[in-house]
Amino acid sequence: MWKDFFKKLLQKFQRKSYDVNEVGILTPDEVPATKLYAGQVGYLIAGMKEVQEAQIGDTLYLQKQPVEPLPGIKLAKPMVFAGMYPVDQSEYNNLKSALEKLTLNDSSVTVHRDSSPALGAGWRLGFLGLLHLEVFNQRLEQEYNTSVIVTAPTVPYKAILSSPKLIKDYGAEEITILNPSEFPDKSQVSKYLEPMVLGTIITPDEYIGKIMALCLSRRAVQKNMVYIDDHRVMMKCLFPLNEIVVDFYDGLKSLSSGYASFDYEDAGYQPADLVKMDILLNGRPVEELVTIAHKEKAYLVGKTMCERLRDSIPRQLFEIAIQASIGSKVIARETVKAYRKNVLAKCYGGDITRKMKLLKRQAEGKKKMRKIGNIDVPKDAFISVLKRQPDK
Image (cartoon, rainbow, N blue to C red; front, side):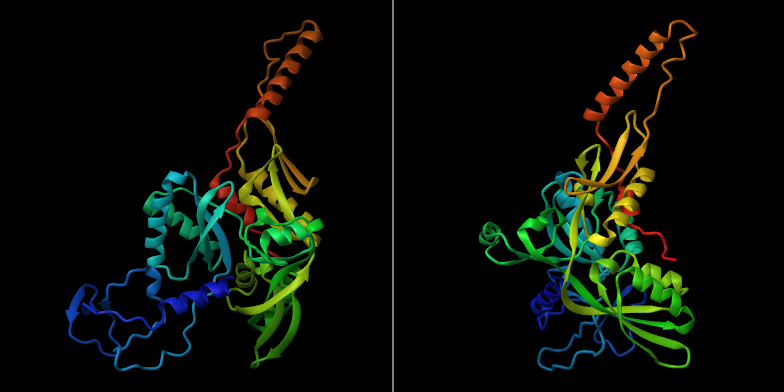
């Protein structure tokens, strides 16, 4: 999906012609000039209509004097894809304007329109890592006074349908799943496919053991390992894209003290045993935290997400049950205890039945509040849920 998106973007804007109104030198103020020479840091005003028309690495030349593009320049590869939605849909235009201004000076962020049944219209954004996502989110809040909901990151999966009704509805036997909430049930699918990437890691040889353990924990299959000099090793591994989009890059840098580098390229799709996992708060699903996980790692992912939510959600006057479920089966649960008032404080002895009556009345009130109470999930909780503990 993203590869096609970049391809269409390049086809749309490459070899466009502009009338240059002004060129100049940055000193750091803008000083108009008649020409720019090699080594100078300058600017030009050309009346571009869209932010995406100016990409890092573009080659500019006179229309009648074409030149070869500068070799070796590539678009930044997003490592984390997450949805961003306004808390209130009335703020959609304000958030759109803020995103356009921020991406103007941060071209490594990719933006693609998206929509959610529960959250409404929004965008699917690509970032270089979780830290990049957090900084971008903070800048939206601090510089543009916007409030957004950040969803769990995901990758495009595919499903081979077996249900004739679904095949007729979609008009194809193979479908691409971009939103986890649209993940089809296993009874209607012959097999699921997950995107794979061929990752290349270059690292000093002293970190090989730690990095191999990290790769194996992410379901990687090692393809090759060679020494490129006396102290550096190049490893090639086949990764499921879902295992590296969140924090693999951060973990790799942490284990190697920042010396390891990582790059990847598309390696197609492979069959996988996938499941859709919902996060429930007092029985109500949280749309932002719907996740597609590999069946072998579903329990671990669900348990971790429940524990993080337990630590992030503030206590209420009623008990909050946090559950991870696959279909109707609950695979993990945590509980946020309720604030409790001591209703027996005014009882100084007397019949035990009076105390029991007060406790029973309190329990009934808590049960009623739990049914009608709204649970406020802090925005920071969505990001903290995504982070994994460092792999040992």
